[in-house]
Length: 112
Image (cartoon, rainbow, N blue to C red):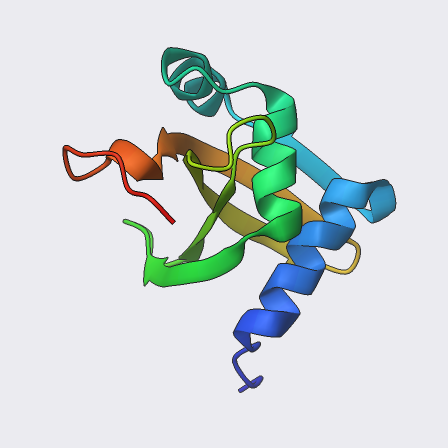
């Protein structure tokens, strides 16, 4: 059995896919959620580049999914949550499942 990749390894693979060293795809659902929360593609990319891995959890099929939280590009008080799956490691292939406004997730805007 292969060792479970560390959070740092997962983030590196996701960021490699984002930078063009692999495949980075945003689902239709994630695009709708992104627009509904007032985010743009640049906000999602910025959050992944500067954010941190905050959750690792299984999806319905038992595959691992990852939540990255990071700042929006034009509003550092707004935190973007990005849920994605790493479909393959070499080269990295990432699917963004959903996007949400982490700063208002619990009914109030968080300040940093």
